[in-house]
Figure (cartoon, rainbow, N blue to C red):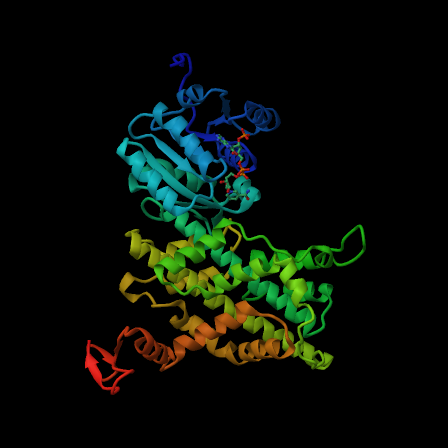
Length: 486
Ligand code: NBP
């Protein structure tokens, strides 16, 4: 091994992987007075960081991994900010042999939580701590204060938590960072965060579409409407940026910016992962699923072109006199649908927590998402309050928390009207409609699942349970239709 004895261990934390996220995170640590060791596979990035931002704090640049490791205080804390997947494994394989018992490797990338569980178990065998750490807020957040979701052991959090809490966003003096739970809990929660983000964006997009195509508002007026909503209970980063985007004019054409953007949305890993995991856990996150599918549908250019001439309703747009009232109803539908989407996300977090033994505190998640991350919103205070009590008193779902229940009760007529109008006028609103269907399904005294069970028994002898007796039963459908205990 190369000689590193001349290097003094002066850095409290190291960051390897200095693309946009890593360098901003390193700068954030340095700006908070921490000495930061910095390293990147291609050394030019390390040099560029120190040249451009070296004056912001104490950086210890290293070209070789050995020198980088030698510059760190013990236990060594190394944040990996490289592309998720194979690059993360490559970096772990490079650094693990250079570390000692009790050192920490922290993956701040967007890893799948199952990869994190695998890596944590393998490194624990070697006496190393592995912290899968969700970081939300994009590049701005990384620099000015992200929402941070670290998993891993409680011991690892004791060594790392104070540093992360230092650089995290703060709301009412509280850091947007907490120990989420063991092994993959942090990356799991970050994944669901992104899933909820998908659902929220879809619902906002549907509200925009309805204001445009049903109320007949131009983008500028919709921007104003969103601006007003942002002063109320929908106050959130996503509503705020929506208003800004909608008020923007394309400098090249003079047209509303939203009209010159191609209407094909990306659906990268995390939204899809959230739905895949929800299917495994048996948690109906229909709002998130509809949002992922809506993005996927938008990208099917040929399919959409082939279907453009399919007939739609002939009814005219809403009368302008009714537009204002309709806009108010859209606000109510958006709020109600948002409650459902978040309720589903929290259900998934708690289902994951039970499945993997993570003991996640649902109130703490609401607390750390109030700042720094993309779904930051006033709304999260209500969720925090709903889950604030002891575990035994937590609501089964946010829908039955007294305040949310009240809000749903007040909104439901408008919500139904908006979903009905959308269907009647041929404007797709899959997120809002799915949210309402979820609400109504949970309210129903009887679901047609009874008929499905009977069908299954008919063609596959799958058996059914009865409402009036315990046990499993099968009807001899092809015979005398008598019933047998199964
Ligand atoms: P990228 O995801 O674009 O990754 C680029 C970095 O990975 C560079 O430092 C590159 O080194 C390094 N790298 C690669 Br690629 N393969 C490597 C290998 N085999 N060994 C060592 N290093 C390797 O960077 P980013 O956009 O800053 O994101 C970093 C992580 O943060 C990702 O996991 C991302 O999903 C996550 N994240 C991003 C955002 C965001 O808003 N961008 C938000 C939250 C989380 P090189 O310079 O030598 O090529």
